[in-house]
Image (cartoon, rainbow, N blue to C red):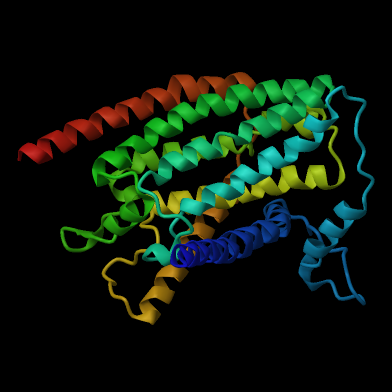
Length: 351
């Protein structure tokens, strides 16, 4: 009995250590830096200075001190609550948006082997879909509980937009599952370490380039970021579903968005960019493992940068354009890509 208790205790401790090291340290660290990096990057693209006012002893450090000033401001700001008949739901909504975004990282492999994955499951991508889809509840409940017509309109847009693009993103990834024959993210990443014709990496983006474009577009739409940010369109809805939120409620909604940016990068890296694998490099040596973890981080940061570039390059779509894009363009293309993938795999198996 004591042996079983010790084993369970060790499993829990290792899980907590991995969750703290990967999710809390890396994911939250990158999301925090993004609160500064995106504003600075947008300033570069728009020929502005960007955040540079926070300082300690006239030392501004290129605006990096804003990463410290922002949470202090949020913690000390008045936490205003509207006159709503649902105050508990109003307070709970930011958590419903923030917590699922963190939990899905439990199945993302950031290195070789089970030691570099918080929870190893053969249905990893289904876990991401199941838990990630709960994010919509936080935004919609927050909008409804705000007792504000602009917030409610933003919540209605969110529910329609996120549900619509979940269909397309699910179909776009089916081709990846068919090619690699697995739903296990660790297995998919490992399979991408192989070489085609002896020199081409068997990455998902090579075998499913259309699916990668579909995934990126749908994932950005589900994260409600420009050019799909009609749920918080300032010119139409003040600030949309989070109009009535201030202080830490506002901060949690904003941070959840940046956490999802990192999530899109990690899942995209795992499914399309080879995950932690490096073409032609295999082995269990410690320096190889370090290089593989570094490769995963580099690929993730590349996709994060790509999302920021899209965010500050394309203009906002109208709501009807977003719906038309999801149902009349992306969904048919995803179905066609799935059909072509099935036909090609059938011919390969018979050859």
